[in-house]
Structures are given as C-alpha cells and as structure tokens.
Length: 190
Image 1: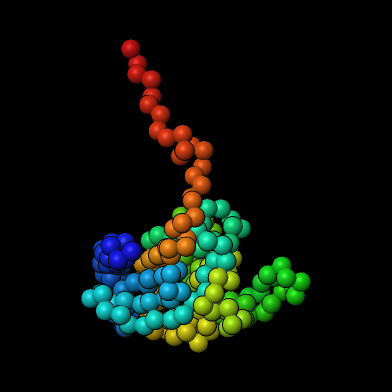
Image 2 (image 1 turned 45 degrees about the horizontal axis):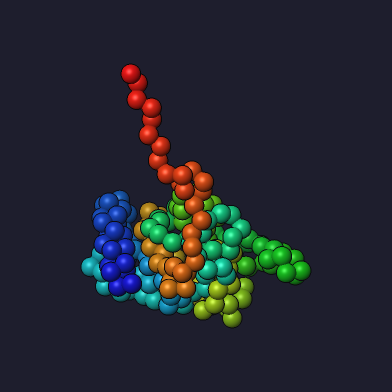
C-alpha cells in the first residue's frame, strides 16, 4: 500500500507542476489525496508536506466505479474541473423523504473523471454520515471542512488522487467485453 501511495503522490506532483505555472493558490496547495482506507481527504503542498486532513464519507458500495448508479467512488488520478456554488441545490436520495435542500453543502467541487459524470467533493446535510460509506459515489465532507477546503486550498486543475482500500481492492473489477477479449491483430494485407 505504501508503494502505491508513493507512486500516486509522485504522479500527482508531476501533474501539479504543469498546473502550478497556470494557477497556484496563496496556500501553495498542490494536490488532494483521498484515502478510502482511512476515510480521509488530505491536502499536500508542492514539497509533499501535509497542509490539512479532513474526515470523509465515500461510496456505499465497495470497489472502483464501473458504471452510473453503482454507488462506488472512482479510484485513480483525477483533477478539479469546476468549483460550483451548490448552496441552493437539492437531491432526492430515494429514501421517501423527497428533495433535500443543502444536500451538497455550500459547494460542489466537480472532478474530471473520464468515463464517469457527476463525481465530486461536496458537503452534507447529514454530518453523522462522515466516516462511513454513505454516498452514491462522491466524496462527502462536513460543511465547515468543505468551506475551508474551498477558501484556502482547492483550485481548478488541482490534481486529486483517490486511493483504494484493502476492502475495495478485494472486489473484482468487471471489464467491458471489448477489454476482456483483448487486442485483436489486424489481418495483414498480402
């Protein structure tokens, strides 16, 4: 696990160097590391020094995200695509309570997650869910932590690494049929 973590940090720092020239917040924050094992979101600077750590909630289903609605949090190296005002947003969790105002807290930090839409880092209407697997795939923070993250650290283009947990990595990944079939050689022209 330590080797995987170091590899992701190195990749994130490599990606952050390009971003650093474009836009660097006053805090010097370089990247975010979300760890599904420890249920934390950590902010690191360009010297790999820890700047902040926040408790999170993540997808209720184990494993790496495969398709919409699977309740899994995607794993890998992503980036912040947008920071949106979500204070007036609502969400229906399908629990019979209807639309919940404030379900996302003050902001929605939309992540660029190729192959998946609607994944982000946001606040919550349910602080008791933090530290659990409670989301539909997003990373959830306490509202005060989200506000601090947005005001002090996060910026568009910021690398975000989402690391697996031991339990998540035990879930077999289902590949699309094209991937399972493997590469096919083109017939050689005579």
